[in-house]
Length: 250
Image: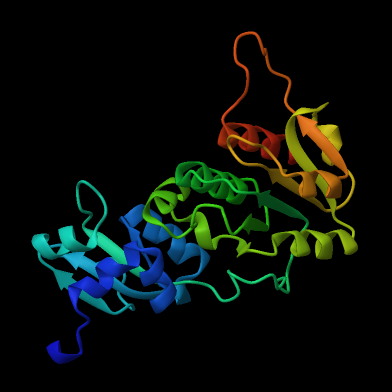
């Protein structure tokens, strides 16, 4: 029934923080990322948007055909995709409430503002079997287009808490026996042996300023990667976090 169809600008609004907050949904572009969402949380997919002439591989989900002009209005990509999915944002993402199944390895992102870095770290955490991610409220929005591009649909493969009082989540986990390892250039050089005992939180700090003093005080260990500082002063935070997550699981 055309009278019940949402206006195209409703879908386009999902590309804004306000639109996502007001609707409780975000937009995933491209079949590969949609398939990843489908594997992780199929019940979260509300609707599929298809370019005219495209065959839909998702039979049980409500679908809507869009013209090329309409898809360009909806999509943030330079070349609009043939498929988009409207996906429901999980409950409690913006709260400090811990999930029922916490897992034993958690990534903490403190004030990481580049959406590409955030998305890459989310994707790597999912790939290495991390159970959840804590984000400060000053981090890039994990459901923004650029972040979703980098996370490649893995954003629902683990639990996420993006909250102003993120340190209270850290404290709650520490009370449950989690240790906190924070990455800093001046920390002790890390190896896989640092991660052998019990559940842990691995914390990565802001691109320019590193971890906060408050987080440093809470940390059980401050760790760094051994690099040739004469040739490269530091590593990109997503690269550093990815290597550390690999070490933590090997």
